[in-house]
Amino acid sequence: MHSWSVLSTLAILSTALAAPPLSETSSAPAPSPTVPPASNDPNYPLWNPRSSDITPEPIRGGLGATILGPQNRLLDLQNPDALAPPTTYNGDVPNFKWPFSLSHNWLYTGGWARQQNVKDVPSATDIAAVNMRLKAGAIREMHWHIDAEWAYMLAGYVRVSTVTPDGKVYLADVGPGDLWYFPAGFPHSIQAKNTTDEGAEFLLIFDSGSFSEGSTFLLIDWLAHVPKEVIAKNFQVDASAFDRIPSRGLFIFPSIPPPPDATDDMVVPNDTPVNYTYPLSQVNGTKTAGGTYKVVDSTTFTASTTISAAEITVEVNGIRELHWHPTEPEWTYFISGEARITVYASSSNARTSDFQAGDIAYIPPSFGHYVENTGNTTLKFLEIFKSGLFRDVSLSQWLALTPPELVKAHLQVDDATIAKFSRDKQVVVGPAQSAPTYTRSQSHQSQLHVETDSIDAYSPHMQNFPPEFEEK
Image (cartoon, rainbow, N blue to C red; front, side, top):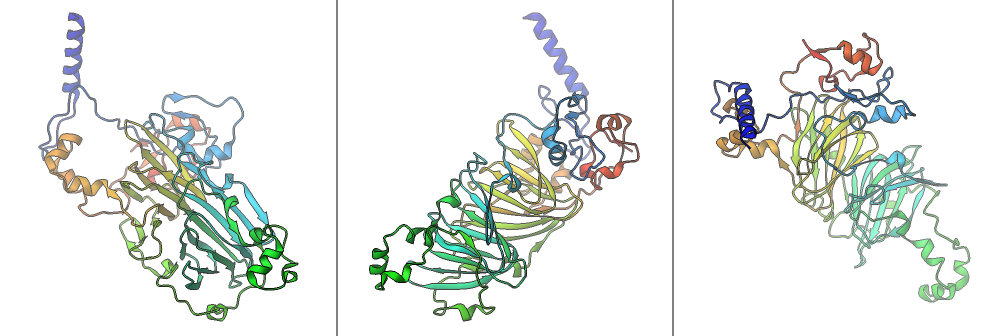
């Protein structure tokens, strides 16, 4: 007991003496001698999908070893923070990434559809999605769901329509970057226009993680399973009128494109109290130092009572600021560019994953996170929430509006640093004001099996340079 006390005292004194001196402008208290400062080790991704001359290895600094067995090199190139995770990784955070490329695709004569739900990402309990493609003129069979449907147009143009339970009608055209929303149980139609030769592609969001396209209520499928004499009685026509009903649902099938003018397609003029489409593409994004953002929720798109979203762009070197959403899970869809996200799940649990266009992230409520542009082009993605209102908490704003002495007591930072914290939400932050430049170290050359002059294998901005690069 006595020898342990002596050793403990010496260790505490050694830690305290080794602590770096405080800034002259700081009034922060000295750090606790029993808890060392967080690591200063850099944790940049060690490569990226464009690293054509690199063999990815599970090595970071002095940790890990080469792969001796088989390797899916292309997949490892896309996921540097999975194969060689940053030192901030800790605990057991469930997988929160799903590429649509891994989803089973249903192929039809008029297009295709693929989905992601809780079976693919078990933690994604509140939101599911479908990526759908329609050839010009093709129809998504008239249908309805037990869940609400929110949609974002990725390419081309479609005509949508619905009839409400009280017999009101809405019909409109939707183009790239625009939205529609149909409440649960509302029957609706989707048909691709021939504005472009290729037709249309869109993203469908459902407010239940267990949703499946296989459980959709389809018009043809229903009538194919009703006795024809019952159908005839219902519509007060001869049963022979329905002799050509297909024997099963068609789901997606080719047809003649609708007339160019939506009004020519209307049985009666639109008479719903709210619009079920929203022209998000015509909304100017709010510009920030690092990109742009647009928020759409029930305050602007009145019909959309269960789904809200933000469309965000992040320039090279930029970052969607550190934040969280109080009670809403975030379903993130990457439209273009490359990114990485670290989620903090409390109790020292953290995990970092990498994303490319077509990938999905699912972040549970209150998990702290950021979205960083790790590519060499503008990053564009959607944040989608199961909520009629968009809400987030900015880490920077929280700290800036908290008594400074409290912040200093927690983070051991000085007054000059706290003064730089933004009292307003930044949403998208630009590159750091000062960033070091790096040259490749000899140790990293051998680690990644690359030549000395092959610096182009890394993304051309500082965030992508590996930790073994030496600061000049």
